[in-house]
Length: 224
Length: 224
DNA sequence: CCGCTAATACTCGTAGCCGGATAATCGTCG
DNA sequence: CGACGATTATCCGGCTACGAGTATTAGCGG
Image (tube, rainbow over all chains, first blue to last red; front, side):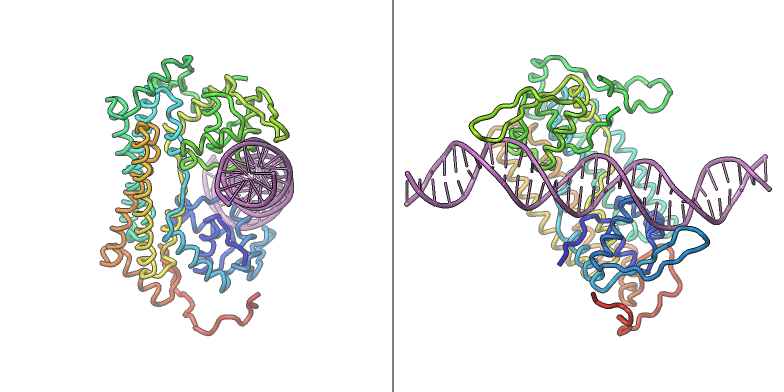
């Protein structure tokens, strides 16, 4: 038996088609409408790749192709019986089994020793602010669901994200304190290492308001 | 200009070479030795791809190739000056900017309506147990660092992961209770949907889900 | 000193992801 | 009424990631 796809977008497709037959573009619109693209990475390239893969695995099938005017043909798909089985199976696994996730921040933390501790603190502070903004924005969305009378169940993934964000926020705040106070074991070694090391370029300063041209994104990049 | 790689493994390579010149296999061993592969996905295929990419971008360079006996040649690399700049820049971004991460569980949650609520509860309970195991195991590792006299700093990424895991655990536990007690708004609708085999929970109610005839499957669908 | 497993050190083919290209139609604003 | 951007709808080429494969040597028990 062929192994199922790994891209969660494929699962979203199965769930949508379980609801009713659709063509790919409509799947994308529906996912956006329900803000599921906040939780499942969606882009058109992957969508069509994923639909093809599902067809090849007999988990979905084309039911008709419609043409309106001279627009591109729309191919409408439906889920198959084995597709339904895989859907429940796969979704169950996602809920049941904690998966090993590699987040950007954890990667950064694991290498943070390469930065000077003072810079690290500055950057962590900036993160703290950004996290607060995200938390607020997320709470805003939660408020919206109330306004539109949508039960919280339909935004449960947002609630989850909010909880994690808040946990991260608090931990980062504590970490900043621990580095500054020296309460974190090893900070002395850390400082020592960077003292004996040839002085390095510090990260691009963002303290002073940059000139009002675009974002200073590529600021520190040149060098050859 | 060449944009920097996206794979965090490339950043790890930069940091390692900042420390001292190495050949790829040694990078892998070192990362494993320090358990950084828990935070940064590492596999040989990607490692060599990534090293090549870094060479092409002039962020690292080959300094010598050694051959011992008739083993494959080992190419030793070192970081370049522009590599150091990119390293600090990139690492700073990871610490400073919360990135949008798409986790498996969040994807699953966002589609959980496709499962029957009773099944969902059962699966969530299983997750709870698995999370407890992971939390214990993570605390075990933390204990090990103490045994080996490694300062906390060298395992902060593990500490961070632990905090997130615990937050998730508590939230999942609460979610189970809320579904069972019906305290979570929308559970009644959820049950209703699955009782009538209506389409998955959706904000925009569709008026007429075709009343499902049990045996009406097939008719045109070769189970191929 | 033989045979076996583990460690060393990389190579390669494939599958899948993604950004952008393409191309037609619809809305709208002066 | 016609120009222009937004929307509908799909396809494609390049690049990356990844697991499996290859080949050699070191360690070690019997």
